[in-house]
Length: 342
Image 1: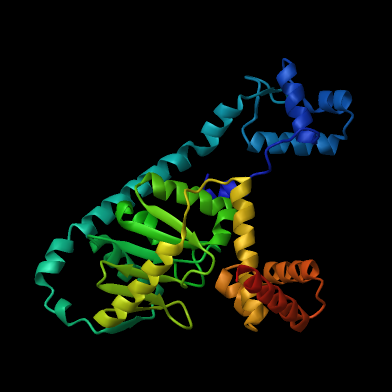
Image 2: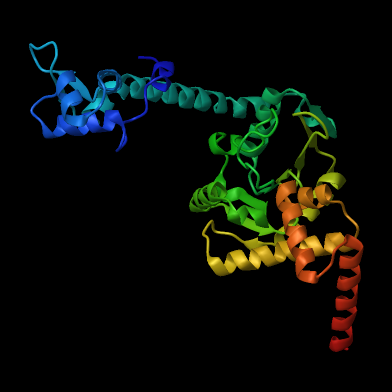
């Protein structure tokens, strides 16, 4: 059976379905056949036949030896082994081949460094359009890093594939040293279960993670020598080696890192309330500055719908019907607090 064949299998029988009832009857009986299921379960012959077909395809029933109409139940573990044994072995072989190829390619790095005469003449800014070439560039930069890798990225599907360029998943398989990694995420990342799981894994491997209300957009700086930024349009990226520019980008990242809050991937109610309050404060500040909803959503790395809902809730809390009125209320509140502090 091929992998596509597995995807075509019927659903595993659940309680209350005809297949589930037939399987339960088979477990409780010496054997079952079509007519017995019709009689004892009160289902039609067509329903019983369809249930038998599903259970046989899932290897949860098999014929009694020497019989052509009676079936017995099969242990689900045995059934899964029959279905998946071939695919498990194929996957293991494939993983072994991929790891072998990765190690062989990495073994060429010393030769590359020692003999590539063009390496000292990299352009100050290199635009890489092709997604595969971009992944190769990212892999090379992070694998060769020796001191630090500073990385700021969105919380929405981090370590996944935005557009056509996988700008994060390469970290999992590139051989990058996790202990060099400092990853900066938006505060909204604390609410995403998938992100928290990946953060826990990264920290267990020696990395560090922090969150900020509005961190720099996708940005990577390695060893204070090279920076990578996504292309303005399309799936490509730009590699920057101009020292003054790299220094400025690193300064931006380290400044945001110093002000960010440590994040270990765990979730607690008080922390969530604090995070939510920080996001609301940032929304209010941006509203006062006249920013549009989509700009606020992008800076906070939250969906436009979520941003608009939070703005509506905040305006209700302020008793304001318009943005102008909300700005007026907030302005008066701010002046009142200044007078109290004085």
